[in-house]
Structure formats: C-alpha cells, structure tokens
Image (cartoon, rainbow, N blue to C red; front, side, top):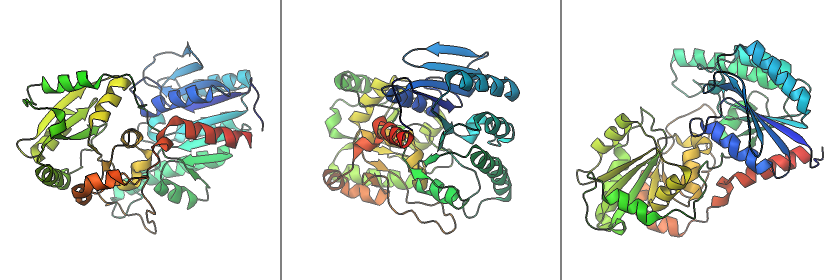
Length: 385
C-alpha cells in the first residue's frame, strides 16, 4: 500500500505523559520521525495523567483518554477517531502492564479487538508475560498464563500484518505460539546532545560535597547508572571488578546516578563500592543534560537481564552514545532458548572490565541502530510494501 502526502497512520499506546512513561516518550519520538512521510495521530488509550479526554496539537495530534474512563467509552471514542481519520495503518505499541496494572488484558483485549477489526495493523509488543523462565514460582506461572492467554488472544484477533519485538527471547516465545515477528531493538529516548556544556556539568559534580575531590574528571573512571535499578539486582560482582579496574588504572571511581533513581537502590550500590568511591546524584534532568552526563561516562551499568537488553531504553541510550555497558551474563534460563548474539559488541560482562580500553578501541558497533530513524524507516518500508 503506497503512501501519499495525506496518508494517515494512527499510533496507539497506553500513556504519553512526557518523561513519565517510557513507551510514551518512545511513541512521541517515533511520531515526530514518521511525520516526515505521514500525517500522524497518536492515541494514548489508558493515560493515568489526564482526568478527561483531551486533545493536544503540535506537529501531530495527540488524543489522550483517561485510564479511569470505562473501556466501553474509550473504545467507542477510539472507533470514532479511526472512522474520522481513515488511517492506512494503525500501529499498536503494546505493553500489557501499561493497559492493566496486573497485565491481564481481559477488558482491553475485548474492546481493542472489536475496534481494530478491518484495519491494517502494525504491532510492536514491548513486553510479554511473567513466569516463562525455568524455576518460576507457581504464583508467577499462573499469573503469567493469564497474561499470556489474553495477550495471544488479542494478537490473533487483530490479525496484525507486521509484528515487531525488541529481543530474541520475545521472538522465541511468540513464535512458539505461531506468531511471526521481526526483531527491532528499541531506540534511545535520549538523543546525543551537541550543544550541552559538559564543563558546567563537571563543575556541578565537583562542587558536590559527596565528591570532595580537587582533581579533575580525567583522573576518574566514571561509571554511569541510569534508569530503574531492579530491587533484586546484586551489584557485588560488578563492584569488585570496577575496584580492580580503578586500581589497575590508578584512578578513583566516580559513580554518576543519572536522572531519577530511587534512593534505596543508590544506597545499596554505594554500600557495595570501595570506601573511597566518589558519587553524584543528578536528580531529574532534561534530555540534553542526561545526554551530557552520559557523554562524561567511561562505562554504563545496567541491572537488566542480558536476554532483555534489547527492550531497555537506558541501555540503548548508553550504546547510542558509544558507551560500553556492563551486564551480568544471562542468569535467566528459558527451556529450549539460547541467546545467539549480544545487541552490541559494547555489551560487556564484569570479568571483561579489565580489558575495557582494548574492547572499546576495537569495537565495530553500529551505534546508529539505536536512533529512531532505522525503526521509522523499517515501519515505512513495511507499510509501503
């Protein structure tokens, strides 16, 4: 189906409050990029940050439906929106926990399947079900089966022409259910800022009482933590290897906690680090400042499981900025599944930190694949096929 200057696509996501919803931020960037070729309308179908249906007009239209509105009302309004704009494609950015707090899509699946029937559907499944890993508890497996039942039912009822996932494990699990998918790692929500004054950011760091260091940042190994730190993640192994690297390089460790990170998570990490480690908490920042702090990092650290790295916007942010990311070798096992390759050669295990400089210098990673453009181009090609 060929597009023309007036062709409309509608992108549906759960919520879209800026810097409050990762998939919402992702959707805004995607809409901006697709706006060069299509007329784009974004619909936030389950938005926790509005109390009544509202419309925002900028370079594209955003329609936001409050999460407390009955699903029957929302589906009726969505149906009217679709009929009015007559989109050539509808892109559903699907995350079960974004549409229902426990991820069980009984109501959303029923209404979305009815409303989307007959449209050309592009589907990006951002998350799947719980309890798929070996050793999962009975509670998690039962909960996961409920999520899975309604998710698979929704996918098969809307008959998507294209289904994207962000990592191999999600492709494996969906294809085991007979659903063909393409892997497209999520892009970074944090573009590379070229106009940020890093010297001012460095000054802020060294004026902080927790740093108390009178030399300069070039005598530090700067370790970046950005985004959610999972509560069950244990930083001990990484802390040991970072300490060894600092001693080898004869530098101090400086940990940057970038953006909004829970204090309890920060305290847990600090307790594991050598006593002479410096640390700085940036607090909430705009995207330019986040990019600036990432640019100061020697290495990033993620608490995400290795098999889920493709769906992590924070990992994508480090990789887009050409920063190596340390992750634990996959400790989550799923029957009959083997991870074939990392999403980048800048993904390192703790034991590789000793060779950090060599690995970075010899990297051939394509950082541009973590920009929004490749995804928008793939979607455009698939929609025009």
